Length: 449
Image: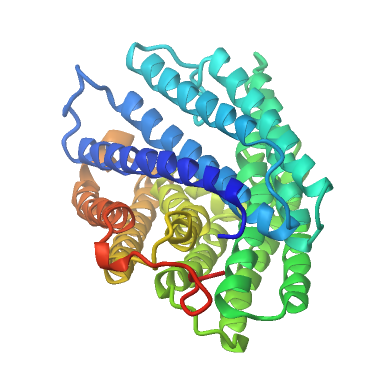
């Protein structure tokens, strides 16, 4: 670690890991309710568990992104963070807002819009935290060295923060409501977050492989161009059936097919960088997570997204378990695994340790990835059967749900594997053997320096 203010990232990572644990446990509870529908129905209803599961996912991913920015921007800009105090104030606002939102959900207070259920005061808190963050990192970058990585990261973070304004727009007209809702949800995960993913992945591969910066930057700009080109108009695949003009069926279908390209480029980028790399970095677990993130993102966001994005297919499949299969694998690959890669790389340096518990860390990767892959296949089969029985034959929804019970039981088993892997990851990151403490010096440098 080269800059003292990078230490602020550690607290973001720790808060993110705590929420990560809550999120996967919430998902496991929700999965069991599909098997046993009356489980906890009077104490903790399914809709509350689902809100906690999805909201915790969004918040811990954002905490990871913010922490990653506070870690990598000083190194890229070659200067300390503008204000550590502002960074801690931002973290406190986000944590208080998260606790306030969960407390509100438990007593039945929520906005009712999926992913955007937060009470109004929490939404304002998130906006204030985002503005503090943007000011802090922008002042840092403006006063220091500019690189392609910081440029792309800033663009992604500025855009995702500005798009949050649409979370406050909640018109009475349902078609307009869903349109503005997708301006947040889609343009986050399929446009601006992709820029954040590309820049963090580029930073990790630069450090882990030793490839020339010029090569990394060329790839990065190509990925960004394709992500924005496809992702913005690709929003149209959500507009098919919500009352917007019919031309969105063609616009959404055409541009959504291009959304595969940036994820394919990121996967190719990761493997080409490792192939060209000349550095034998000691942190093998971070490299595994980086390669795994780009690969699983390609299949989850790219391939599984393409499976049901054309309007002729989506007419039958939208809102089925096929959507759930795509959502789980794409979020896990593109953003969950990416954050875990960053934590794996940065936390040993932040705590002045050698890369620790790497075998357990890599075991957690395979357990989580295997569980998520099996869950995706199970939900894909369930969704295909659901589409045929419900949308083609016309069977009643609840009749079809009863017929899918075996798939929900298998999905719960896959979810249990993911939770065990997540807890193993958290253990591998927080519990360190004493013999792994290192003393930085010319003969024994901190890994990654």
